[in-house]
Length: 231
Image (tube, rainbow, N blue to C red):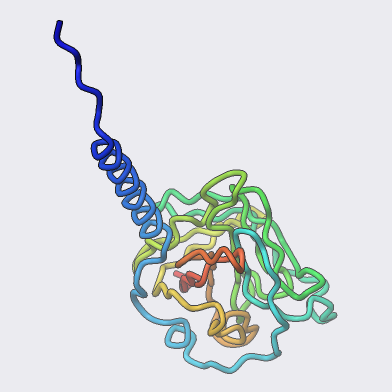
């Protein structure tokens, strides 16, 4: 009777090494998919034409999956009420983005509030709206959450110049924009005054997280910033 040989110790070690290698490849692929693409098209300052802004930012606060950019004082009385309708829906057909837009302010630490639902994004309601004659309409959303996976703006890292963006406001009006540029910016170097400017030509600025995830900070290293102009 022939006895079936048992796997040797070296075979077991080899099999274990193969599993580790596969897991390493999977982790690498996940990291590559999570980071933003290289900047493409015009930078925000170029599209804006002027880096001057009208107020100073406050500091950002931590968040498990999205550290939003620092924002302005939400107590500014001049924008407490507005005549222009607020955004209610954001669509980027080429990226299959279709999200509900919610007006948001800031947290106690000065960080922009971001809706938790993965299908929702936040519009900074103390800034400009699509129908305003000047200033930036700023909309931000999670790239992903631990509970729900990819967020509404996860595909923003693939935005390219020429893509169409449509923002629908509460009165049913559709405001069309064309993407001019996408930037991957380290959060510490984020040009907050330019992003949240209330002066200058009207622009749409979309923001999400990207780049390497830093466990010690519970945050991604970069922000993906997409700039679009009205058409």
